[in-house]
Amino acid sequence: MRIIQIGAGFWGGGWASVIKNSPWTELVALVDLNEQTLHTVGDQVGLPKERRFTSLTEALKVVDAHAALVVVPPPAHETVAIQALEAGLHCMIEKPFAPTLSAANKVVEVAEKVNRFVMVTQSFRFRRGPRTVKRLIEEGAVGKIEAIYGRFRKAPPFDGFRAEMEEPLIVDMSIHHFDYIRGIFGIEPDYVRARSFNSSWTWFKGNASAFVEFETKDGTMISYTGSWTSRRPHTGWDGAWEIHGTHASILWDNNRVLLYPQGNIIGETVFRARTLEKDNDILEVPLEAVDEEERWGTVKEFVTAIKENRQPETHGKDNLRSMGLVLAAVESTKNGGNQIDFNEFYNKNIKL
Image (cartoon, rainbow, N blue to C red; front, side):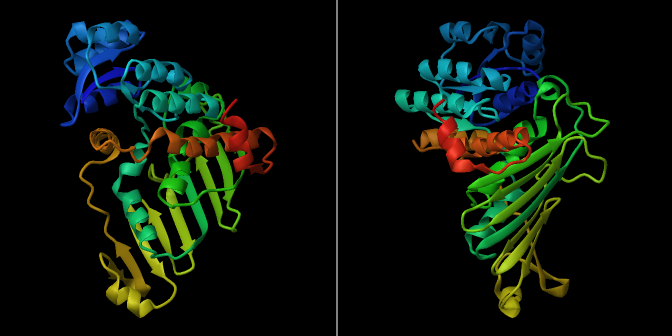
């Protein structure tokens, strides 16, 4: 698949390497407003100078492509994606999808109108840990989920637009974890409440730590705490999760998945396939074999879905609700942690 990449900044350099070197794609053009950045990344991936452009408009005049990868800062996602779609290109868009639900929804509507696919790069879904947990839940290993406890701790030395964001943790990082709630755990929250704050040593302008709660109408409760300025100990990038259900619980932490049966212990420890029995009737679940992970897995899914004429797993319309959880959490922080009716919030903001 012939790809034009728009955006070569902090995250763009890594993406250009993936697109250049993956067996499913060819990097046919690179676009960035900053000429120094454009040529630095272009040189790194060995892209000819005549395939480097300071505008998508110029690139489209010269290059024949099948799709666009949008890696510009989030406020420009809508404009760039719509231009690419209207030029006949499928779009892969870095998360977060867009600053507002209505902006993201406009991209989805344009994609449907021009019969092109949009995928949001929720790359964390394509990792061995989440794929393993997803399989266990779908097999019914935990029964009905009634409570989930998640925590995330890191201290990345980010600068640039992330350091200037109003809610950098919730918007730029927790989107991965909130997307896990829907895409990996299979839960669709109905209510959201959140508080955000900063440590005294923060290097972020906006709040880089948060407490967030989700709830469903049938009583499933989810608590999540996160920080991008955390003191050690840190979690992995996936976070650390306890998932409690009617039949068993899962502990997923640092790429280790443990299953704790609560009933029929003998049946579980003897017959549960693809597990290793440990002390105290704990079952360790070896991580799923995944051909390609993270961004490589995202690219493979994007290309494969288009070839098969189906929606990619993290397609734009599905991602609207993951992004909605993020924006509802931000709204709650602005209102002192008041509970937000998610469906009411979503329906109100999707068409603004």
